Length: 270
Image 1 (cartoon, rainbow, N blue to C red):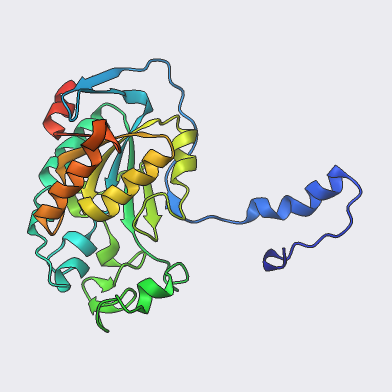
Image 2: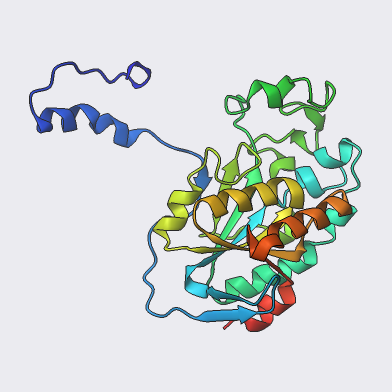
């Protein structure tokens, strides 16, 4: 592979191949932060609660809380979403419920994943169509550009606007996933991380319901995870879009997953 300076032609033994590919082990994959070692599980606690289209039961030790894009870019009145003309108040209104759920999940030692839609500073992971294509915002409001000194470059990793909202900040040991697309599984190590942790079920929260949250749930569904969306912990700039997404997710017996209220899940936690 010329890109990494690895060359070999005719190889006469397994040992020589192993020697040739050894440099691959040192190539970093900086897509997320957080632990990846498999947990030692001695007991699996069952969590049953009211949901739609029917009751949901989660194996707590095999379930992760996934908080999608609760970042200033989308929720702050000076962020990217607001500067595009969206009313961020419906999205920001879910933060207290998300904070309460996060605290309850932490108290019981559950697995937590926070995602941020973000791009590398050189924008090498941002496709041209997303960066400056025909459907992009006007010049001055595009990814990588600066809306204000307070927010920094739009949706760029490490910039102030690309941080989580203050009440839902990640703690040490919680996985923070930087995703360059709408879905949490696209071009990230999320699937590898979850499988290494023994996770089979996912509880989704975040914004926006019909875009990044629903996309991530559908990706998870295709990968064999059972999913729950908490209705009071997700929102959209367009209330009707949120409701439509919720109806689609739980249609046909829960084709993508369950939907529920966070109070019911919290009350059922062990």
